[in-house]
Length: 414
Image (tube, rainbow, N blue to C red; front, side, top):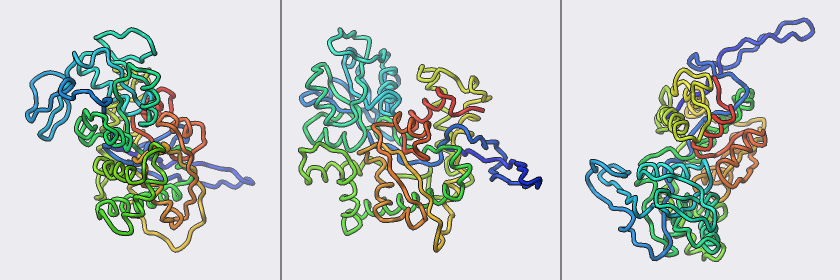
């Protein structure tokens, strides 16, 4: 769910040559979110779009059972008429790759381990394993890395990865356990993180950037849904140019993996396309829930109260700033602009973040007077670092690394 980082009406008295000049900084719904320090979430990027797979030759029925009625007990996930029940005896002592600590896929695997009553611990090559623990190897962010890690770490059983890496794995003969769409239907995935100092001092540029992003998402979705034609071909070529896949794959196989990924990834910029008082209300509620889960699970060292908030909802209300996307949803494009130069950190090769590349190729951002420099990063935590050290004004990042790192570093505080 989503909220806003509201810039309260602050009157700043600046004395220049003994003349008092008053500047009013924008106000949204009375919440004091005017801090220029720290980071915030200002839009969605996508929901869903990852999967858990095992190496070739494994038997799915050893690890899970799929049922059509919600179980009364056990480690199960899903909904909407389908639930995946995990067998703890099969998973205990096994080793699974994740893209890195604090990534959404890593967090989701930890949730699965917890539901099975298993510990969740990092694996070191050669160590003995215990049947009461599900082990992980971080930094397995692609199928190529899974293959190379498997060569050096025979104990590696599978991985949970973002698209199109999951589709590439299945295409190469690996065994699909479940997609995250099945396990956590409609779950929050990537969001747009922002540097508060920049967005508070460049509000018009931020709204224009968001308006261009909305157009990019809408045109991307329309092209994908068409399934053919020039626009569809442009999307496929954009994915081929920007999405990481093993170099030995043919273009035909890459396109097949891309099209399979499009079946899972849901591209968004807000909770819905309808203009509302808070277009990120669902995202905001998700963040409130995650803030509690991450503290109770030990991923963050300070609770919402430690950070000065009276409730997790108050934390989420400040951290999620819907004001820019709300304004962008009704923004009217002008004939000309003074060009704004911004740097956007993204996860390199990730199809979740295709809309920004597609928008750049179609010159959509240029049409709104925005000149973008892409800063490619390995995963969400690296995007957070680029944001927090000032190397990027915006970052496309999973909500877990954005929330975990912001709480741990104090980038979000009352």
